[in-house]
Length: 335
Image (cartoon, rainbow, N blue to C red; front, side, top):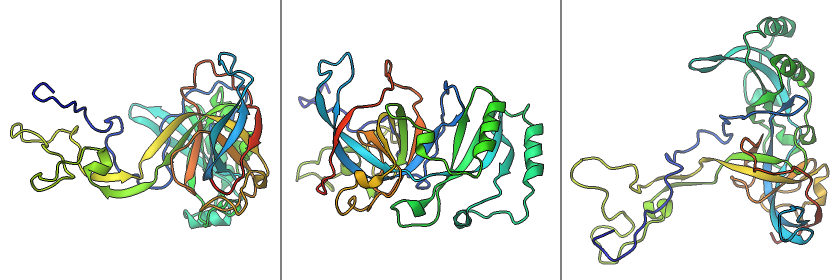
């Protein structure tokens, strides 16, 4: 500022406005990117965050000055019990966005699914499947509804989480055939994701409730002789125009926001959670009993929060996608 000697840059980032509260624990995914694989697949998976630890890996990047040497990296462990697709949905493109054309449910629906949504008593799957096949020429995108199986995870609940995933394929017909094959079956994470690839993680962050501008934006606390308040903004704007700009730090909802972490490297996929569970279990989570995924770095959300994974929509240029050589994984209980 020209009229004062103190350097006072603005506080906080405007990149995440509005800082609104998420409507539910399971986030939405609004963009799926382009799928360039050979065989059709679901473009993501879901699991429950168990905790973090560290691992010793060998640097295999040929451009790195530390190639061939070992380094310690932080890793996040996500409990990934099998998911179950229970619905095929066909969408068509309209000027107002995608519109649902038709839908087919599985016949062997889980009993726990009734905890999350009402299920039809008399359902003619053959008629619905025939209707779907007749409208394939109108359909531009095939997606599937899946639900989790919390009984197989370390979370203390029985009600499954329901979400939608796109089927990536070279054609609508190929996507539909793949969806028919996996409808009503258990899908494991190794069927969808490979070691070394990049995934985006989407989750709802830890909530902190209604907070003031000091906690929410990191503004400076005023001097002790300030009038009325110390933990507020000194000036929220001029007399004219008589409105407050959106750039002014204001109190409000802090945390419990939907956030996306791009390009997390898949360090390891495993089938025996006991091999990476610390003695006594993960803090505030417990023991992983089945499949798990280990991602490099941190992901949004607290422990037990559903973490949605998606094929990376803007992968790092030059990433080779080869498995990461892991020589040690810490299982210390003091994480």
